[in-house]
Image (cartoon, rainbow, N blue to C red; front, top):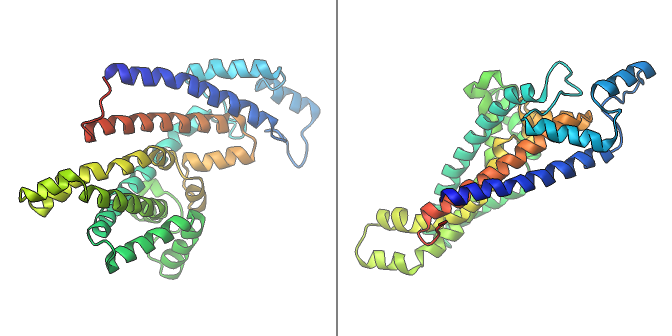
Length: 307
């Protein structure tokens, strides 16, 4: 197991190298620059800024300097937020995005899993149709539609919840963005759980467990659910990485100072280092959570071994 984990981590280095290389040159190819304004800066000021941020050097040299910088876990200074480095911005924003995403992920797993199990146990009944219809709507309606609807109804018209701001992670401020993030994931988890649970309930080992006279709780939770969660675990790799590194739409709509919001601002303002830092952090989370998913497979499925 240890050799497998070490091999996966070493194998992630070329992947990260390719991601950094492609992202670095793509963002430089895009039109515009970090210091392009409606009112152009004076030539001397522009020259000094380009020299300070090494933009006056050849592109290959800028690339080598950036590789050396991130090898030391230094994402460099921000071109737009000039009083901060990217590391300082991430130190402020990443914990917020992780807290928000982790809460939404737990809510989605619990509610979606319960709904999926209920729908599977009542297959082709009214409960099953209701859950699947709601899940289909949850999958098809995007976040940028859900967020304004919740804001108008619960925040503006009824006045129950604040419509924006983080307020240090206060409970009332977290509800709307968490619900907005969790609803599509609840729908996906419910659909995955229902399908895999129906298949697991028809498997031979579950029939054997019923034949031995085990209670429904033991059959469903101990025997069927263990195999039914495998498709959900597979889905959780990229989903967890996306949620924990921040949702661009949700953080922008609700004014949450997370890493997703900084990514939007960095892209709009051509803040090369901020966009690159966000891409690297998201890529690291994707690789990490895919590794965790593979390890969970070995715990849940006795047929899977990484020896």
